[in-house]
Image (cartoon, rainbow, N blue to C red):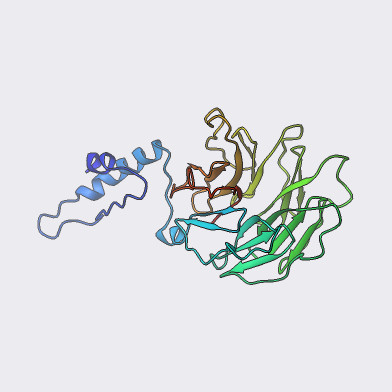
Length: 298
């Protein structure tokens, strides 16, 4: 029984095991094998969650033209062919309550898909600033970040921002919500992390950074363009450091709420999984003239 399970092991494999006894000979082969099956799977980096926790889980990849690509999770629509001239899609955030998502655009607009629309920054972006991040929260709303460190809350509490606090030449580049407290972290271009109603566990100050993700354990993950993953207050399971092809950078990171693992998305559209199920990627299929601008796990 153990050899059968391990011999067919691959992502997406379903193993049905009967943990009672056979009705006629009362044998318990499956039940006897189960402890060794669990031990061997854990040794290979797998973890265990309920079926309910896995339903609808996966990730979405966003491209600059507003296209949304779903992997292991439902697709509810996109902004492809709907963006005004000169406007690009800059970020995507999942709604933990509905499984839908929001897309934030370079003009500050927010479009919702199977998620409640609460408002946007359209026409109100401060002069000289840009939209640099969006994060969905457990409260069912979202946070929009601008490069000057301002946090704009829609349908979710506001706990402060970095407005007026950034050093010269430093910009706010990413925001991540804390699933435990409802607070959030702001990632800055110098690698620094500021926390708001969320625990601060460290930062990458002095290094270039490309992404931040909050985890179910109350910590966060910071990504660097070389594929390095730096964990703060939460487990680390590996990274793409030293594994990226020439000319490819790591551009985003998303946490898997079911396993505690995470996914890294790359500039070529590829996705790598770490203690999280891999469902596919855009590697080699990013539309001509477009780039990956957002990544959201569910």
